[in-house]
Length: 291
Image 1: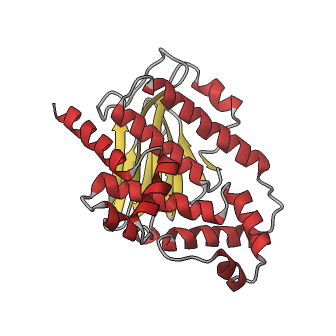
Image 2: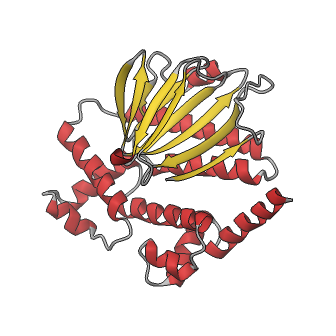
């Protein structure tokens, strides 16, 4: 199992704070690939709000005793004191980001962005931008650089805005065939991102023209197939830099690049720093935390 998280008050205690309109209290991610089951049950809920985003796989939520399977491309919003019960199973290959937030103006903010309050499960779209924003929130909480609390709020506003835009643009009349094909492609790219993938060959294998496939994939995921694969490679490389001692050449090979220098250039382009600088930054943070 992979997990990574950050807490504003360096505590697992739930946060209730009305000093500002919107405050991010904690954020993290779970990816099940070894642990058979990860259950959560909070009978009385929490004092703050919780937002969960299913990146891949599926999850099992229970509302008023009834099971509801939530698939990738959906979010779940728990309001304060609402019972929270859900299970992640390894066989479903779930990857889920979670975030807790509070503040004096939360309800108005959620209403502004048209975030549903009557149904805890809602469609958000399967955009790689969500993963990027959640990872940035985790990073800001962990590193605590100047202005990080303001950035946390800005990132959460971006998540809400992306949800609003996606839901407004989502066309319920789009054929189930199209939706299934784009989701199948996204899952395929997630599973094979570190292999050589020809977009042309993939489209032809599914009986689609290349231009039609690229146009519709970008509409559903907000990135072209090539960009989506690149972001997967770089984000997974970042995870390896955080959690392993592999050298740059080994990490480059794991995520699909034979040339470490080329990998480093792509990493810098997306992350704003080289892989070595990224790892050094993490190392410096760990030293500070240990002091």
